[in-house]
Image (cartoon, rainbow, N blue to C red; front, side, top):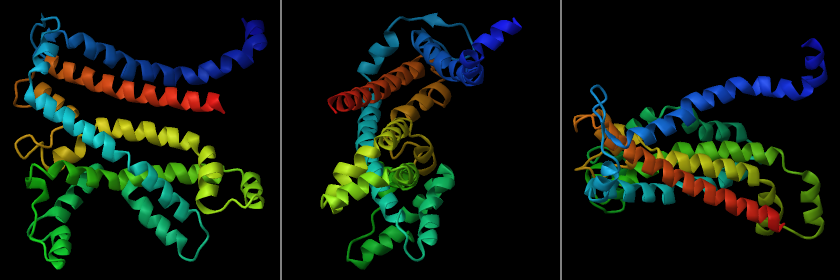
Length: 295
């Protein structure tokens, strides 16, 4: 055994280091995914006997208006939440300079990343308050009437997304700051010799080197948009009249709240949400692979 270890130490050691992480990933990610798929074929209240109903939960979803409203809100979240990526990039480009007081600016932009989503939700709830909120004070200065953003079915989802973009932009900014530190300075100097400046420098020299950071930012942002729950729970609790629900929140309502502990139906919603997430991420991976292959 000792001789085998000495002969294969370089091959085995990495797997020993990876084993705890792989075990945790299988137990807390892979297994729950398959368990959710299995539960989605049953009618179950979480305590009693499971009753096999086949695809009945999925059929019910097809006629559920609340499900379609939640799905529509998730699509809006997904599209607008991606604004955090270019916003984070431009903030990172600004903070990557050596100018006076840059540490103060960095601290201000880092702040949203380190605070809780609960705090973000409360801050923006006060910000949108129609009586004393800063938002209505600002628009009132320009002659507009107060708007109850979180009580308006047409604006509430966009108001919550704006709150979510604040910390998400900070997260993307950190990813891009890390990537900018690894940018090859020789390529930048070569670009300057070829008279590449401004947007040309950014597009042809810097951005291609930031692809790993962009990939991570994209995946994390997509997952964040699709699993949005905290801000909705804190700011509106799904209201008004369910207009700010997303799939993750609707799943929680069906499986764990006063709607009746419908674990099977909630699991079916979770499976749909997971499928959307995987389709989006796989499509992005394929695009990145084709871009790399094209190079």
